Image 1 (cartoon, rainbow, N blue to C red):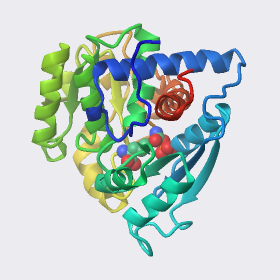
Image 2 (cartoon, rainbow, N blue to C red):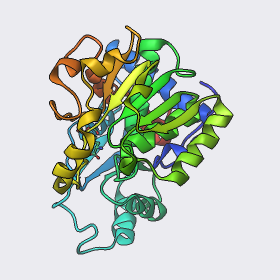
Image 3 (cartoon, protein in one colour):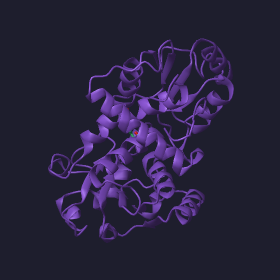
Amino acid sequence: MSGISLKGRNFLTLKDFTPEEIGYLLDLAASLKAKKKAGIPGTSLKGKNIALIFEKTSTRTRCAFTVGCKDEGGYPEYLGANDIQLGSKETIEDTARVLGRMFDGIEYRGFEHEKVEKLAEYAGVPVWNGLTDEYHPTQILADFLTLQEVFGHLKGLHLVFIGDGRNNMANSLMIGSGKMGLHITIIAPKQLWPKVDLVELCKGYAAESGGSVTITDEVEAVAGADAIYTDVWCSMGEEDKAAERIALLQDYQVNEELMKKSGKDSTIFMHCLPAVRGKEVTNEVIEGAKSVVFDEAENRLHTIKAVMVATLGEENE
Ligand code: CP
Ligand code: NVA
């Protein structure tokens, strides 16, 4: 396709990928999507066994890895939080080496990002991050494929993330936007701003790509947005923070009034899902004509499949 090969690589955060490599994954995802729509079965994961470790719950990510793997002829094995010894009866290092002897690739969803890094260090096979407390990189590929489908390009788009500005989605959107030349604005109360060192890193990416990174607590900064993105106010593992977050974020809800503040009729609404209607977004907006949330959800399949095919597949298509 392009001379780019990601064979054997881990997929832990988009920090590890060049803009060309991210573009390559998006192109591959688009072509795998077209292939599936045309009813052409894939074979590039034939004979490959993949482990799906989920220490947190999942609908989209789990199903995308499962169906994506099966679509390309592989075998996926789901390993839930209570199914294996990881981290309780057995160290990550030992589990990684055992799974690496039996499986050709490992997906991991959990809490501390260091765990997926350790898994990758010891497994000896590609490890894919299916979400950690810090990052959610496969979601960004789906979101960017969706943006490309809607607008025809990524560079120069104005993306606003509003809500919990220090969660995995805000972090990963900022990294992806910096790499791919989008203008990203994170709107959040100061207590929920992303870490300064990550913001600086992403500003460095943006300086290279022609994008920009802005952090503010002003809701009015939504002006000019091509896409308004939000996520739950309490991520998995933070359920005890509900009252505190509602108090902090109630003025940051995406509702019709906020959508209008973009000043553009074309502004779309995005959410990684699952959503809490009535909290971070109103039912009216998420069900409205500008909402692309189910396109994003479908694109999880095509983009996650692209990650598996690119890093593990016999052929890249
Ligand atoms: N967006 C997302 O990761 O959804 P799940 O938690 O259902 O996998
Ligand atoms: N920030 C959310 C994303 C879910 C896909 C969480 O971590 O729960």
